[in-house]
Image 1 (cartoon, rainbow, N blue to C red):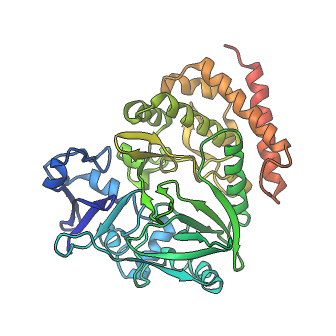
Image 2: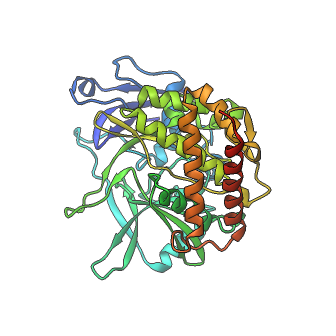
Image 3: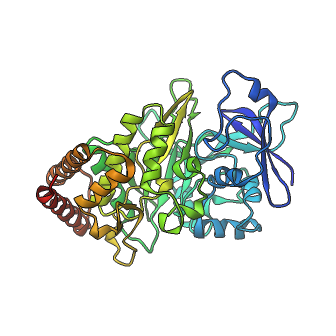
Length: 419
């Protein structure tokens, strides 16, 4: 296979090659000599020697979709689902963060394979119907789009015209997208409203979250998320990418091991990563703690290592806004096993203040601070839920009641906790 040229913010940084189904990455000498050069990943520090080990697969494979979506893409493209390089070759033009993987340049110039394919309302509705069978529209001429995760989704460009009409376009080649659309799967009715409500609840209590809302495109309810890893267009109309990597990539865990019970990262490792890697660890530890409390109280058992990321801006490394928050308890058939244990608690329904106390010992957190924060987050969640104007529509009252019960239970247990 031909090598792929790896670009960061539109600048060539190195070459990714396939060596008998093993990926090899090497930084360019010119990039290493640049005083402003930054590493692509915590696991890929700047060095002249090539990377030939698991770290390459973890970072670049972590840019790709997972599970059924990945299998369907592989079938549509006629490639093996286990061949990361072949998949990156076909869909690695527009990825999470500021990475673009492109074919060899002509005359050393960054390729200008860009543009937009504008969609009519009818076109957009048809695309939403097609996505379950054609994730990321992989194989469609001119599209090279990739996003991690198991849920079907699509990067798009949304533009508001002078008359207030929102237009949608597909980004071609290496054109940056501005939003991500997640059509609601038929097997999880109400998922879009569920996620929009949980995200609004998190934002209302003061957490830094991605901006999301629900739209019906054709007959399909969709969650639309404004990309936090993009600087959205100003007067010049230019969209700039922001580099990011998720906690699994930063810690060296492949996407297949994002769950702790399958050998993935623990909360102890996540908090230590923040201490070691964030340029503002005090604030980011608080953000991570709030995210853990919120996931527990909102009934989200699926808050795994790929649901937390770092954003990079120059030499600054900060936790990204919260994203992918869903009350998984809305579907009793889904497992309540926690993606990352809280103390010794392995299941959502058993987490108590005592388990947060255990987490303090494991993650080197102060119990008085954590105790106070658990109480504050729970009370703020109850206040927001009781305010009829605070949150978006949620027709499934069982979610609202479940979150309310969980917050009230945690507060009662906290009042009985000694120390």
